[in-house]
Amino acid sequence: MVEMAPATPGRAGTPRSGSTRGEEIRTARARRYLMCRPEHFTVAYEINPWMDSSRAVDTDLALAQWEHLRRTYLDLGHVVDLVDPLPGLPDMVFAANGALVIDGHALGVRFRHAERAAEAGAYAAWLRAQGIEVTDAVALNEGEGDFLLAGDWLLAGSGFRSDPASHAEAQELFGVPVVSLVLVDPRFYHLDTALAVLDDRTVAWWPPAFSPGSRRVVERLFPDAIEATEEDALAFGLNAVSDGRHVVVAAAARHLVAELSSRGYVPVPVDLSELLRGGGGAKCCTLELRDAVAAA
Ligand code: ARG
Image 1 (cartoon, rainbow, N blue to C red):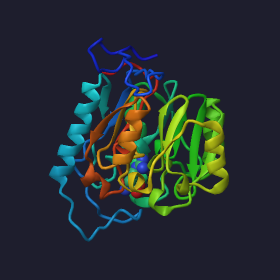
Image 2: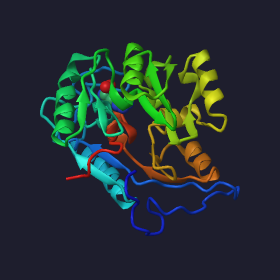
Image 3: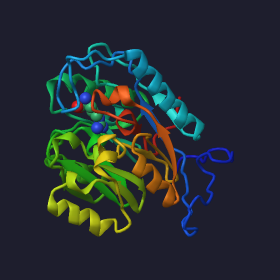
């Protein structure tokens, strides 16, 4: 377990009831995240429907929005590590795609698109330098873009990026039961664009992004799931990061923000509009390092 944050009101590790229903007390747990400053962020190629390489990116705005996100995590009491951004890898800011780390062990990634291939080695090298063991991936997998740990289950997406064969690989490596979910809407090409894990028992999601069978699986496993609207999903509201209590979420996902409050979570709205030009939001910028060695 990661150490709890100091007991400052509203920070991770200081449970408080925020539920309007009065029965739910959401508890925060301090996390360790890895992020990558968007110094070289731009839209130089198009590998998802959000990317338009004909429109210039405001890198300074992306940097300011990203810095606000980093500050938000620190203010919530989390630890944020940084991996150096590399020139020529404009999507490296999307750290979620760098690995999947559980119990201090990492499964490396293999990207579907050649444009991002070199990020895999950069992330693996950083993790190894921290003393985190990295198992190289065999099948294509884009890290926490398509793998989301939800309590006892590892939710695993396929359909656009990660190969379903990577799901079995992750299950074998971590010994955590994997639940394969099929994505069907190209706008929501990674699992973390269509579903957010709020705590061990609760997710928020937009059901139409999933195949009919996958929808039934999510409904079966998470009867309390929060349903986002299409508008929420298009604002990348589901690309959210929860510590169990505080949910860092796109401000523009208004319905979802209200729903989170009514369910006892504390929404922490952020604006990452410039990073959305690359098809990413808060979660895409954030890789959770679970029970890894202490930060340097
Ligand atoms: N431009 C990047 C890509 O298409 C965005 C990645 C977003 N990351 C995520 N975890 N959903 O690969």
